[in-house]
Length: 283
Ligand code: PMP
Image (tube, rainbow, N blue to C red; front, side, top):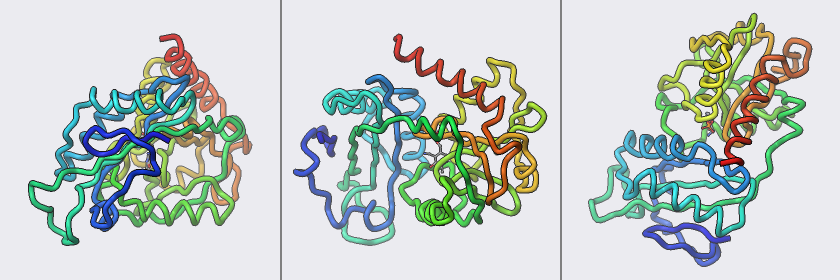
């Protein structure tokens, strides 16, 4: 696998070395992005790399590339690795320096690595839906930053997997915030509900695509916090993410959602989302 490595180097993954002093390794001191590749083309790359730069800025990390340059790196990785359906992963840490909490000196440059990998669309989950498990949102208060610090998310996802579920749903002070690696949506009486884009969630790129599609197709949206009780009484539920796209949720904590099958509004949104992928293929 050809990967991108600091300072414009493209090389085989096996030949690359990261310092034991890297601050990503010590502190999770960095940010990342995942960009989907459909038919060899990047999907919503501009939105992803804009968010990448915003995440970096929020942790006071200056990145040496523009959105356009990051897009070129991602494109090259997809092409060089022959990726037709998959994703590009990119991360930046605050670089390598002897371990101390405060920032290293100006001479320490960020460590940027990226790769492209084959990853087929999870079509059976998209069609049939998944089970989810609710759990306490124990994370920090800057969930809007796509930080490498994912311990709260990792523990929640593992708890869900051990309960036979595909995703964990975070609940903070009785409010459903988001999934461990996805955004949460509910449908009640034809209206779509999702947590507003505050510091308590990551404003997903797929979430934004869904909201745009709702505006375009006249589906009402309430970007308002909703409780776990409301969540449990939704007619339909689904989650979104770059790799999961729009995945219906058919059970929560072992109880069926509605009829226990994907809902009509969810399926309609999946259909129009699919069209955005086809449009990309025709570009
Ligand atoms: N929330 C969290 C915590 C996530 O990790 C992700 C996936 N990166 C999302 C939401 C969905 O974001 P996106 O649609 O940009 O993949």
